[in-house]
Image (cartoon, rainbow, N blue to C red; front, side, top):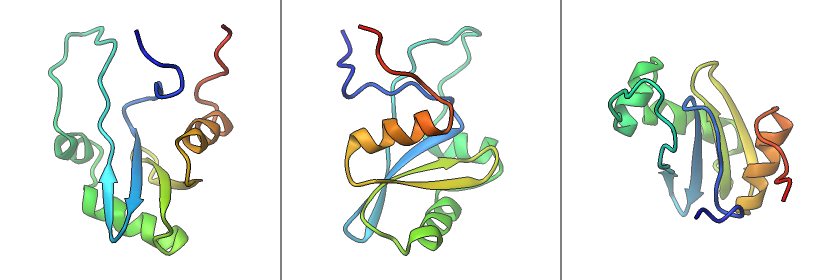
Length: 106
């Protein structure tokens, strides 16, 4: 059973990235539904499918907030980038602001 405080449901083109120290940690998740039985792609392949790369996204993220520590969201479909904050809960809040997800009804 998933822990609702750590589980995030999002479209594949929304990528969650954490700035730690001098590097960027691209968070990988586990798909919970695969309606078309499509093969699972590597991070690099997902970024390439949306005509970008992890390096290009890291540069864009650095530009929006000067590389401030914390969590970021990259919409690699529309090439839009967002700073969330320093806590994991900030990611959920930002996704809700973007119209993705809802409060757990339980």
